[in-house]
Image (cartoon, rainbow, N blue to C red; front, side, top):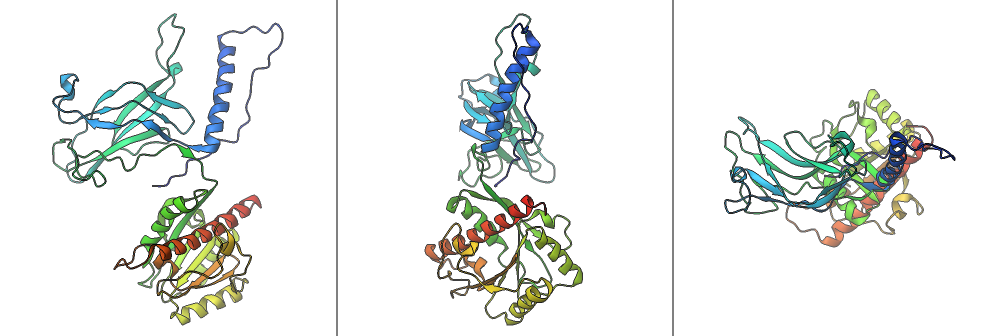
Length: 394
Protein backbone atom coordinates (compact mmCIF):
# COMPACT_ATOMS: atom_id res chain seq x y z
CA UNK A 1 0.00 0.00 0.00
CA UNK A 2 1.31 3.43 -0.97
CA UNK A 3 1.55 5.74 2.02
CA UNK A 4 2.85 9.29 1.94
CA UNK A 5 4.63 10.34 5.10
CA UNK A 6 4.62 14.04 5.99
CA UNK A 7 7.59 16.29 5.17
CA UNK A 8 9.50 17.93 8.05
CA UNK A 9 7.92 20.77 9.96
CA UNK A 10 8.63 24.29 8.71
CA UNK A 11 10.59 25.40 11.78
CA UNK A 12 13.87 27.39 11.78
CA UNK A 13 17.04 25.86 13.19
CA UNK A 14 18.96 27.32 16.11
CA UNK A 15 22.64 26.72 16.74
CA UNK A 16 25.13 27.70 19.39
CA UNK A 17 26.99 30.95 18.71
CA UNK A 18 30.67 30.27 19.31
CA UNK A 19 32.77 33.11 20.79
CA UNK A 20 36.25 33.30 22.31
CA UNK A 21 36.16 32.30 25.94
CA UNK A 22 32.86 30.40 25.64
CA UNK A 23 32.70 27.73 28.32
CA UNK A 24 31.76 24.36 26.80
CA UNK A 25 29.78 22.43 29.38
CA UNK A 26 27.67 19.27 28.90
CA UNK A 27 24.49 21.21 28.11
CA UNK A 28 26.13 23.31 25.39
CA UNK A 29 27.81 20.26 23.92
CA UNK A 30 24.44 18.50 23.69
CA UNK A 31 22.93 21.57 21.97
CA UNK A 32 25.72 21.48 19.37
CA UNK A 33 25.30 17.76 18.71
CA UNK A 34 21.50 18.04 18.52
CA UNK A 35 21.78 20.79 15.90
CA UNK A 36 23.76 18.55 13.55
CA UNK A 37 21.43 15.65 14.19
CA UNK A 38 18.37 17.77 13.38
CA UNK A 39 19.95 19.00 10.14
CA UNK A 40 20.72 15.42 9.08
CA UNK A 41 17.21 14.21 9.90
CA UNK A 42 15.70 17.23 8.14
CA UNK A 43 17.62 16.32 4.98
CA UNK A 44 16.36 12.73 5.12
CA UNK A 45 12.74 13.70 5.72
CA UNK A 46 12.79 16.21 2.90
CA UNK A 47 14.02 13.78 0.25
CA UNK A 48 13.21 10.28 1.48
CA UNK A 49 10.51 8.06 2.94
CA UNK A 50 11.15 5.74 5.92
CA UNK A 51 11.49 1.98 5.73
CA UNK A 52 13.90 -0.95 5.63
CA UNK A 53 17.34 -0.44 4.07
CA UNK A 54 18.62 -4.01 4.20
CA UNK A 55 18.16 -7.28 6.11
CA UNK A 56 15.70 -7.56 9.03
CA UNK A 57 14.46 -10.92 7.86
CA UNK A 58 12.35 -13.01 10.22
CA UNK A 59 12.47 -16.80 10.54
CA UNK A 60 10.48 -19.25 12.63
CA UNK A 61 12.45 -20.81 15.48
CA UNK A 62 12.40 -24.61 15.25
CA UNK A 63 13.09 -27.32 17.82
CA UNK A 64 16.62 -27.78 16.48
CA UNK A 65 17.56 -24.08 16.67
CA UNK A 66 20.46 -23.12 18.95
CA UNK A 67 18.39 -20.83 21.17
CA UNK A 68 17.20 -20.93 24.79
CA UNK A 69 14.41 -23.41 25.45
CA UNK A 70 11.70 -20.82 26.10
CA UNK A 71 11.84 -19.83 22.42
CA UNK A 72 11.15 -23.40 21.21
CA UNK A 73 7.44 -23.03 21.91
CA UNK A 74 6.23 -23.02 18.30
CA UNK A 75 5.32 -19.34 18.42
CA UNK A 76 8.69 -17.59 18.50
CA UNK A 77 10.71 -16.02 15.71
CA UNK A 78 14.23 -14.75 15.21
CA UNK A 79 14.74 -11.26 13.79
CA UNK A 80 17.83 -11.15 11.60
CA UNK A 81 20.39 -8.31 11.57
CA UNK A 82 19.62 -5.34 9.37
CA UNK A 83 19.09 -1.63 8.95
CA UNK A 84 16.05 0.64 8.77
CA UNK A 85 15.34 4.36 8.97
CA UNK A 86 12.35 5.86 10.73
CA UNK A 87 10.24 8.85 9.72
CA UNK A 88 12.54 11.33 11.47
CA UNK A 89 15.64 9.95 9.77
CA UNK A 90 16.89 8.03 12.82
CA UNK A 91 18.87 4.87 11.96
CA UNK A 92 17.54 1.59 13.39
CA UNK A 93 20.51 -0.80 13.56
CA UNK A 94 19.96 -4.43 14.60
CA UNK A 95 23.52 -5.86 14.74
CA UNK A 96 22.75 -9.39 16.01
CA UNK A 97 19.89 -11.91 15.68
CA UNK A 98 17.11 -11.28 18.19
CA UNK A 99 14.73 -13.94 19.52
CA UNK A 100 11.14 -12.78 19.89
CA UNK A 101 8.10 -14.52 21.36
CA UNK A 102 4.73 -13.79 19.73
CA UNK A 103 2.98 -13.44 23.08
CA UNK A 104 -0.54 -12.68 21.89
CA UNK A 105 -3.73 -14.37 23.01
CA UNK A 106 -5.69 -15.96 20.12
CA UNK A 107 -8.83 -14.05 19.09
CA UNK A 108 -12.19 -15.51 19.98
CA UNK A 109 -14.47 -14.53 17.11
CA UNK A 110 -12.64 -12.59 14.36
CA UNK A 111 -9.18 -13.05 12.78
CA UNK A 112 -6.50 -10.88 14.37
CA UNK A 113 -3.51 -9.27 12.65
CA UNK A 114 -0.30 -9.14 14.69
CA UNK A 115 2.55 -6.81 13.72
CA UNK A 116 6.26 -7.22 14.43
CA UNK A 117 7.89 -3.77 14.36
CA UNK A 118 11.21 -2.13 15.18
CA UNK A 119 11.81 1.43 16.32
CA UNK A 120 14.66 3.73 17.26
CA UNK A 121 15.63 4.30 20.89
CA UNK A 122 17.60 7.40 21.84
CA UNK A 123 20.21 6.44 24.45
CA UNK A 124 19.57 9.78 26.18
CA UNK A 125 16.15 8.38 27.13
CA UNK A 126 17.61 5.21 28.66
CA UNK A 127 19.32 4.53 31.97
CA UNK A 128 23.09 5.10 31.70
CA UNK A 129 25.72 3.92 34.16
CA UNK A 130 27.54 6.60 36.11
CA UNK A 131 30.85 7.45 34.46
CA UNK A 132 29.92 5.86 31.12
CA UNK A 133 31.38 7.97 28.30
CA UNK A 134 30.18 6.18 25.16
CA UNK A 135 26.50 5.57 24.40
CA UNK A 136 25.28 3.13 21.75
CA UNK A 137 22.09 4.06 19.92
CA UNK A 138 19.49 1.40 20.55
CA UNK A 139 16.45 -0.20 18.94
CA UNK A 140 13.24 -1.68 20.23
CA UNK A 141 11.23 -4.69 19.01
CA UNK A 142 7.49 -4.80 19.63
CA UNK A 143 4.77 -7.35 18.98
CA UNK A 144 1.47 -5.49 18.76
CA UNK A 145 -2.08 -5.80 17.50
CA UNK A 146 -2.39 -2.15 16.40
CA UNK A 147 -0.99 -1.00 13.05
CA UNK A 148 2.51 0.50 13.22
CA UNK A 149 2.85 4.16 14.14
CA UNK A 150 4.76 6.60 11.93
CA UNK A 151 7.92 6.05 14.00
CA UNK A 152 7.75 2.23 13.78
CA UNK A 153 8.96 0.13 10.86
CA UNK A 154 7.10 -3.11 10.16
CA UNK A 155 9.26 -6.18 9.46
CA UNK A 156 6.42 -8.69 9.14
CA UNK A 157 2.90 -9.50 10.26
CA UNK A 158 0.78 -12.61 10.74
CA UNK A 159 -2.90 -13.43 10.88
CA UNK A 160 -4.26 -15.39 13.84
CA UNK A 161 -7.20 -17.74 13.44
CA UNK A 162 -10.13 -17.36 15.84
CA UNK A 163 -10.25 -19.80 18.75
CA UNK A 164 -7.03 -21.52 17.66
CA UNK A 165 -3.77 -21.74 19.60
CA UNK A 166 -0.98 -20.02 17.67
CA UNK A 167 1.37 -22.41 15.87
CA UNK A 168 3.75 -20.79 13.43
CA UNK A 169 4.35 -22.69 10.21
CA UNK A 170 5.76 -22.11 6.75
CA UNK A 171 3.21 -21.09 4.10
CA UNK A 172 2.45 -23.32 1.14
CA UNK A 173 2.80 -20.20 -1.04
CA UNK A 174 5.06 -17.46 0.34
CA UNK A 175 3.19 -14.84 -1.72
CA UNK A 176 -0.18 -15.97 -0.35
CA UNK A 177 0.34 -16.58 3.37
CA UNK A 178 -2.49 -17.89 5.50
CA UNK A 179 -3.21 -18.23 9.22
CA UNK A 180 -0.07 -18.60 11.32
CA UNK A 181 2.24 -17.72 8.41
CA UNK A 182 4.72 -14.86 8.43
CA UNK A 183 3.57 -12.23 5.95
CA UNK A 184 6.25 -10.00 4.38
CA UNK A 185 4.09 -8.37 1.70
CA UNK A 186 3.58 -5.13 3.60
CA UNK A 187 7.19 -4.34 4.42
CA UNK A 188 8.17 -0.86 3.34
CA UNK A 189 11.57 -0.07 1.88
CA UNK A 190 13.31 3.22 2.49
CA UNK A 191 13.03 5.15 -0.76
CA UNK A 192 13.14 8.57 -2.37
CA UNK A 193 10.18 10.84 -1.70
CA UNK A 194 7.95 11.20 -4.76
CA UNK A 195 7.89 14.72 -6.19
CA UNK A 196 4.19 14.45 -7.00
CA UNK A 197 1.39 12.75 -5.09
CA UNK A 198 -2.24 12.32 -6.03
CA UNK A 199 -5.24 10.97 -4.15
CA UNK A 200 -8.32 9.76 -6.02
CA UNK A 201 -11.84 8.55 -5.26
CA UNK A 202 -14.81 7.01 -7.06
CA UNK A 203 -18.11 8.91 -6.86
CA UNK A 204 -20.98 6.59 -5.96
CA UNK A 205 -24.53 7.43 -7.04
CA UNK A 206 -27.83 5.74 -7.83
CA UNK A 207 -26.80 4.27 -11.19
CA UNK A 208 -25.93 0.57 -10.59
CA UNK A 209 -23.02 0.98 -13.05
CA UNK A 210 -21.36 3.68 -10.92
CA UNK A 211 -18.63 1.34 -9.64
CA UNK A 212 -18.04 -0.88 -12.66
CA UNK A 213 -14.40 0.21 -12.94
CA UNK A 214 -13.64 0.72 -9.25
CA UNK A 215 -11.03 -2.06 -9.00
CA UNK A 216 -9.27 -0.71 -12.10
CA UNK A 217 -8.57 2.58 -10.34
CA UNK A 218 -6.35 0.60 -8.00
CA UNK A 219 -4.64 -1.04 -10.99
CA UNK A 220 -3.86 2.43 -12.30
CA UNK A 221 -2.37 3.66 -9.03
CA UNK A 222 -0.11 0.61 -8.87
CA UNK A 223 0.90 1.04 -12.50
CA UNK A 224 1.85 4.68 -11.98
CA UNK A 225 4.61 3.71 -9.55
CA UNK A 226 6.41 1.79 -12.31
CA UNK A 227 5.51 3.96 -15.30
CA UNK A 228 6.36 7.32 -13.75
CA UNK A 229 8.01 7.02 -10.30
CA UNK A 230 8.05 10.80 -9.87
CA UNK A 231 4.28 10.56 -9.33
CA UNK A 232 2.87 8.42 -6.53
CA UNK A 233 -0.77 7.51 -6.09
CA UNK A 234 -1.98 7.38 -2.50
CA UNK A 235 -3.91 4.23 -1.64
CA UNK A 236 -6.55 3.18 -0.93
CA UNK A 237 -8.86 4.52 -3.63
CA UNK A 238 -11.79 6.28 -1.96
CA UNK A 239 -15.47 5.52 -2.51
CA UNK A 240 -17.45 8.67 -1.70
CA UNK A 241 -20.65 10.52 -2.49
CA UNK A 242 -21.19 14.24 -3.02
CA UNK A 243 -22.05 14.83 0.65
CA UNK A 244 -18.82 13.31 1.98
CA UNK A 245 -17.04 15.93 4.14
CA UNK A 246 -13.61 14.57 3.08
CA UNK A 247 -14.29 15.21 -0.60
CA UNK A 248 -11.78 18.06 -0.78
CA UNK A 249 -8.98 15.71 0.27
CA UNK A 250 -9.04 14.04 -3.15
CA UNK A 251 -7.21 15.52 -6.12
CA UNK A 252 -9.33 13.61 -8.64
CA UNK A 253 -12.88 12.26 -8.53
CA UNK A 254 -13.86 9.50 -10.96
CA UNK A 255 -17.48 9.37 -12.14
CA UNK A 256 -19.03 6.80 -14.46
CA UNK A 257 -22.38 5.16 -15.21
CA UNK A 258 -25.11 5.35 -17.83
CA UNK A 259 -27.25 7.97 -16.08
CA UNK A 260 -25.61 11.03 -14.56
CA UNK A 261 -27.51 13.91 -13.00
CA UNK A 262 -26.60 16.35 -10.23
CA UNK A 263 -29.09 18.15 -8.03
CA UNK A 264 -28.59 21.72 -6.85
CA UNK A 265 -26.66 20.78 -3.68
CA UNK A 266 -24.39 18.37 -5.55
CA UNK A 267 -23.70 20.99 -8.20
CA UNK A 268 -22.64 23.49 -5.53
CA UNK A 269 -20.31 20.91 -4.00
CA UNK A 270 -18.79 20.29 -7.44
CA UNK A 271 -18.26 24.00 -8.05
CA UNK A 272 -16.46 24.38 -4.71
CA UNK A 273 -14.40 21.29 -5.41
CA UNK A 274 -13.27 22.54 -8.83
CA UNK A 275 -12.51 25.99 -7.40
CA UNK A 276 -9.88 24.43 -5.11
CA UNK A 277 -8.06 22.80 -8.03
CA UNK A 278 -9.82 19.44 -8.01
CA UNK A 279 -10.42 17.42 -11.18
CA UNK A 280 -13.60 15.53 -12.10
CA UNK A 281 -12.94 12.67 -14.54
CA UNK A 282 -16.16 11.49 -16.22
CA UNK A 283 -15.67 8.22 -18.09
CA UNK A 284 -18.64 7.12 -20.26
CA UNK A 285 -19.57 4.50 -22.85
CA UNK A 286 -19.80 5.86 -26.41
CA UNK A 287 -23.47 4.86 -26.53
CA UNK A 288 -24.36 6.87 -23.39
CA UNK A 289 -25.53 9.74 -25.58
CA UNK A 290 -27.85 11.35 -23.04
CA UNK A 291 -25.17 11.39 -20.35
CA UNK A 292 -22.59 12.83 -22.75
CA UNK A 293 -24.95 15.67 -23.75
CA UNK A 294 -25.80 16.33 -20.09
CA UNK A 295 -22.12 16.66 -19.12
CA UNK A 296 -21.40 18.99 -22.04
CA UNK A 297 -24.35 21.22 -21.11
CA UNK A 298 -23.39 21.14 -17.42
CA UNK A 299 -19.84 22.29 -18.16
CA UNK A 300 -20.97 25.14 -20.39
CA UNK A 301 -24.04 26.48 -18.56
CA UNK A 302 -23.35 25.75 -14.91
CA UNK A 303 -19.55 25.61 -14.64
CA UNK A 304 -18.71 28.25 -17.26
CA UNK A 305 -16.02 25.94 -18.68
CA UNK A 306 -17.18 24.63 -22.09
CA UNK A 307 -15.66 21.28 -23.00
CA UNK A 308 -13.19 21.37 -25.87
CA UNK A 309 -11.60 18.47 -27.70
CA UNK A 310 -8.26 17.76 -26.04
CA UNK A 311 -5.95 20.55 -27.30
CA UNK A 312 -2.59 19.76 -28.82
CA UNK A 313 -0.64 21.42 -26.02
CA UNK A 314 -2.80 20.27 -23.09
CA UNK A 315 -1.00 18.61 -20.16
CA UNK A 316 -3.04 15.45 -20.59
CA UNK A 317 -1.78 14.95 -24.14
CA UNK A 318 1.85 15.82 -23.41
CA UNK A 319 2.94 15.17 -19.81
CA UNK A 320 4.62 12.89 -18.91
CA UNK A 321 3.77 10.71 -21.96
CA UNK A 322 3.21 12.13 -25.44
CA UNK A 323 -0.02 11.19 -27.25
CA UNK A 324 -1.15 11.98 -30.77
CA UNK A 325 -3.83 9.37 -31.34
CA UNK A 326 -5.52 8.36 -28.10
CA UNK A 327 -5.59 4.67 -27.04
CA UNK A 328 -8.45 2.20 -27.20
CA UNK A 329 -11.16 2.13 -24.56
CA UNK A 330 -13.30 -0.64 -23.12
CA UNK A 331 -15.14 -1.29 -26.40
CA UNK A 332 -11.84 -1.52 -28.29
CA UNK A 333 -12.50 1.76 -30.07
CA UNK A 334 -10.28 4.87 -29.85
CA UNK A 335 -11.49 7.04 -27.01
CA UNK A 336 -12.46 10.69 -27.33
CA UNK A 337 -11.55 13.26 -24.73
CA UNK A 338 -12.68 16.81 -23.98
CA UNK A 339 -11.52 19.19 -21.27
CA UNK A 340 -13.03 22.28 -19.68
CA UNK A 341 -11.44 23.74 -16.57
CA UNK A 342 -11.19 20.88 -14.10
CA UNK A 343 -13.69 18.64 -15.91
CA UNK A 344 -12.33 15.86 -18.12
CA UNK A 345 -14.85 13.94 -20.22
CA UNK A 346 -13.70 10.63 -21.68
CA UNK A 347 -15.96 8.85 -24.15
CA UNK A 348 -14.94 5.22 -24.53
CA UNK A 349 -14.76 3.71 -21.02
CA UNK A 350 -11.01 4.28 -20.59
CA UNK A 351 -10.82 2.86 -17.05
CA UNK A 352 -12.01 -0.53 -18.31
CA UNK A 353 -8.57 -0.94 -19.92
CA UNK A 354 -6.56 0.01 -16.83
CA UNK A 355 -6.87 -3.51 -15.41
CA UNK A 356 -7.62 -7.12 -16.33
CA UNK A 357 -10.70 -7.95 -18.39
CA UNK A 358 -12.85 -11.00 -17.60
CA UNK A 359 -11.49 -13.24 -20.37
CA UNK A 360 -7.90 -11.89 -20.14
CA UNK A 361 -7.90 -10.88 -23.80
CA UNK A 362 -6.41 -7.39 -23.48
CA UNK A 363 -2.89 -7.14 -24.82
CA UNK A 364 -0.08 -5.74 -22.73
CA UNK A 365 0.32 -2.89 -25.25
CA UNK A 366 -3.32 -1.80 -24.89
CA UNK A 367 -3.19 -1.86 -21.08
CA UNK A 368 0.12 -0.02 -21.09
CA UNK A 369 -1.14 2.72 -23.43
CA UNK A 370 -4.32 3.19 -21.38
CA UNK A 371 -2.36 3.36 -18.12
CA UNK A 372 0.06 5.89 -19.60
CA UNK A 373 -2.86 8.13 -20.54
CA UNK A 374 -4.30 7.57 -17.06
CA UNK A 375 -0.94 8.65 -15.62
CA UNK A 376 -1.16 11.84 -17.68
CA UNK A 377 -4.62 12.51 -16.23
CA UNK A 378 -3.31 12.00 -12.68
CA UNK A 379 -0.38 14.33 -13.43
CA UNK A 380 -2.89 16.92 -14.70
CA UNK A 381 -4.85 16.56 -11.44
CA UNK A 382 -1.69 17.01 -9.39
CA UNK A 383 -0.70 20.14 -11.31
CA UNK A 384 -4.11 21.79 -10.90
CA UNK A 385 -4.22 21.14 -7.16
CA UNK A 386 -0.57 22.15 -6.64
CA UNK A 387 -1.05 25.49 -8.40
CA UNK A 388 -4.28 26.11 -6.49
CA UNK A 389 -2.34 25.64 -3.24
CA UNK A 390 0.38 28.05 -4.35
CA UNK A 391 -2.33 30.61 -5.12
CA UNK A 392 -3.92 30.11 -1.69
CA UNK A 393 -7.12 28.55 -3.03
CA UNK A 394 -6.72 25.43 -0.87
